[in-house]
Length: 182
Image (cartoon, rainbow, N blue to C red; front, side):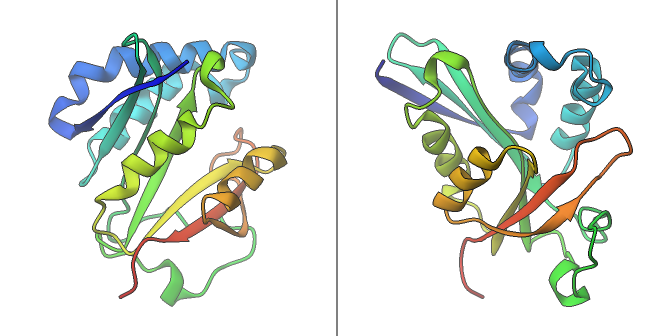
């Protein structure tokens, strides 16, 4: 399978790609559909809310036949963001204080089964971060998925602790990566 184009999408274009995002999510999480947190309707609500945040963008991957391979999306953490509030061990205030321009949160990196292990996730992810103005990027990875965490470490992230953002959510490892120095 050869790589195809990457489509960069910004918030005003979200309605055009919303259905595609939801379809890929349903395909990837079919096995977890019974878990309330991974319910497709609940994800749709989260995705819609994320797309309203300043700086939201997504990258849609395609193969050489123009078939969707996956996507990644995120947004700038707003001032007074609650992103860090669920940390199991509190982090220093100077680390968690957001101003709307400091940290880009990668909310989803999702690749369809046929393209896993091909470098497609890294390609999509790196394109998402390439032109970001923020100093750093953060993401959450299910703490039970050590192989995924190790992959993010290979991409330059480091673990900074765990959190459980919702009562019915898994425990996630919080990860951070510098994008540029201040």
